[in-house]
Structures are given as structure tokens and as C-alpha cells.
View 1 (cartoon, helix red, strand yellow):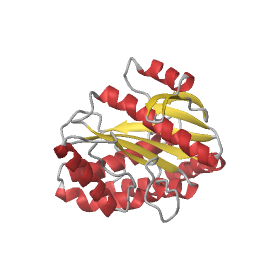
View 2 (view 1 turned 60 degrees about the vertical axis):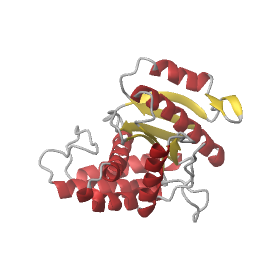
View 3 (view 1 turned 180 degrees about the horizontal axis):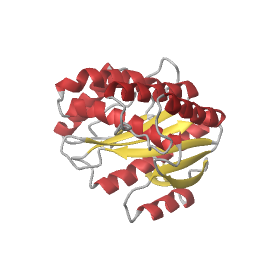
View 4 (view 1 turned 90 degrees about the horizontal axis):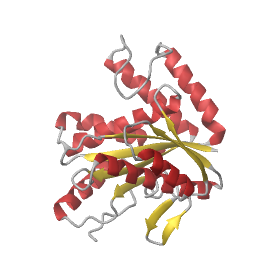
Amino acid sequence: MYLLYCDETNIEERRGDFFLYGGISIPPENCASLSRRIDEIREAAKVPTRFKLKFLPAPDGMNHEAFIELKKSVVAATIASGARLLVSVILHDIATTPDVARRNAINTLCYHFDCLLNRYKSTGLVLIDRFSDKQIDGHLVEKFSVGVTGLPHTSQLRLSNIVGFHYSAIGQSHFSSLIDILVGSLRFAINAHTRDQKQNLATASKILEGIQPLFFREKETSPISELSFFFSPKTIRVESYRTKYENLKTFLNTGGINTAQNILAG
């Protein structure tokens, strides 16, 4: 059974920023070995047993360079495991509220995960990071009992390959730490572009190049599937917003994240 650990970032409403929701899909045959490998990486770096590893902050006493190497080792182990990163981004200028953006992104990732499970001929479990949203419990119940609604080809689709939707939190699994590191890294890179942080662009480029092998491609030489990196919504009618999406797509491509999805005007 595949595991999909999910997390969010850039939740604060800020014009010009993209809300980002991501999940890491870990193959069943490598779940245990990846968890053990992260144990080894933490031990080698002398990370305290009870320390909750995230994108930030570093453990007490660890310098910036050592912390970067620690996170790079975790990402490298994840790539070696065959895990796949699923991401959905939406411009805050378009999103109704952060809570609505999150619920819609959960819809998207769960649907895309179910599509991948079809390809893998397998089943999966979704684990989302805890947060404050009074509607989320009912939303997850709906994901299990009903599925997703309002798709172009059907009014309702049961996510039959997903056997459960549950909560997780940092410290309860290495994989919660892992997805926090991945979405935090991607946020840093995207914000360097959208906020015109020229001093961070070189680091951003290295981050993108480092995580690009995690994205799913239909074929080895194909661009990154829409199932793995999704620009939400599918059509963007306001030209100024559409330009921001097109610029982000171009920026990601320079770092090796060559997304297949076209930015449509509607």
C-alpha cells in the first residue's frame, strides 16, 4: 500500500504569492527502508532523538551548512526510494480563502494520487498534516464516502484506490518531516522568484534541480505530469494573473521542473 503524506505552505494571504500544497507518495516496498535510512541520517548528524525535523529551524548547535547537508541527504534518500512528489499551487489573489484553497488542493492531490494508484495497480492511504479548519473532518469523510465531485467528465467519482484519509503530525513519522522539508524547499525557491529576492535565486535554482527527480513523468523523457505538478485553476481569465502563472512555469523549467500543463486563458 502506497502512503501519501501531505503538508501545506505559504498559507498566509499575500498578493503575488502562491499557496502550495504537496504530498509525497512512498512505495510500499521501500517505506521501511526509507524510514530506517532517515534514522541513520539523523544519527550521523547527531540530531536529538526527540527533535522534530522540519525545513526550519535547525537543531540547536547545528550550523547552517550542516543543516543544509542534512536536508539534502534526506532528499537524496527519498529520490533513491522511488517516492513521487505531488504538488498543487494557486495564486492567493485567485484563492477565495486559505481554508478553501487547502480543501480544494486536498481534492486535487487525492484525485491525482488515485490516478497514480490506477497506474501502479495498487491501493493507498492519505495522511494530512493537522491544522485548524472546522470543515476539514467532514471534508475527509466526504473524500472517503463520496470521492470528488464536479469533474469535467463526471459529476462524482469515488476514489476507490484510496482506503483511508487520516491525520498525521511532525514527530509521528519521518515522512511528516520529509514532506515538510520538501514543500518548505519548494516554497523557498518559488518565493525567491515571485518576491524578486535576487539574493536567493542561485540557491533556489539548486533546490529545484535537487528535487526535480521526485516528480512523476509518464515516460522518462516526458515533461512532468499534471498529476505531479498542477497549476490551479485550469483556466485563468485575468491576464495579469495568467502572466504570473506563465512566469512561474518558466522559472520552474529553468530548474529542471519542466511541467506538462499549459496555462490556459479559458
